[in-house]
Image 1 (cartoon, helix red, strand yellow):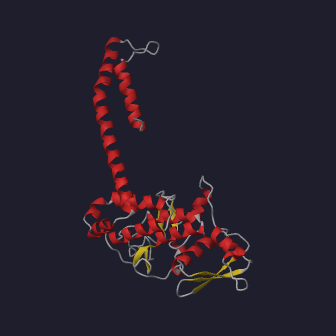
Image 2 (tube, one colour):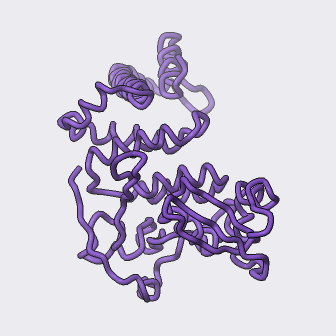
Image 3 (tube, helix red, strand yellow):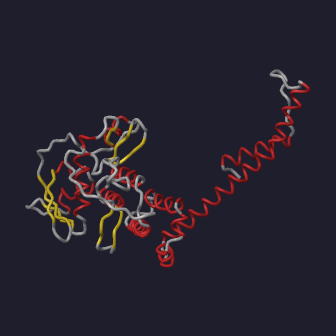
Length: 313
């Protein structure tokens, strides 16, 4: 993995320059076979305005109560659990303003910048503005990481959004951010490990999707990670991440061994099948009305092969 840089540009008007062959994630989800949970874009926006105070800098946001209540977390807050009686205000002192801005953008628009677009011509997903040559890493003109003071370094923004979506009960936003992470490229090893640790610390054990994403990424790019001094240092520190990585690597090796054994078994069985076909051709003993009988050994071999392919031992 290699570090990448981005050129900041004005976002105004970029959405209108997208190709007609591309549809946004929300539009694609509406026409897809599955029912997708989406923010209430058409809801009544005359509900009460809620003020949200984010972060140590106490940055202010304003949102309609109906829109916020799409999240179970904020629905409970608006019922009075966290809401101050007269000010219609919710305090989120530990939230990053940049991340909460993306959450609000999703609640109002069904996505956050850069939007996820489906290219119908290629039948693939890509991020908005990623086709511009000056935008590296496949993410458009937006930095893919965010500095978290509590972590002491930069973490992938989509990972943080996934974890916050887990806290706010926004399942579709979790799927969206996870899909965007799969389009990332050129990220430093240290950033990936730091983001993986963040994912483990901020998702429950019952939610394995984001964790599995990082385990698969490390295994897929193992040649890069094994040369990394950062990886060595992090493994010496340890943690559940690296135990899960060990288990995943063992499973990967088992799959490779099983696949090799199946191919070897098929190679051994192939001469028997060829001989059987030759015998049938020469003697004519097999007909649709009187098929040739296989030996018990051959039948057992075929059954064993079926069990190996289906994963039964």
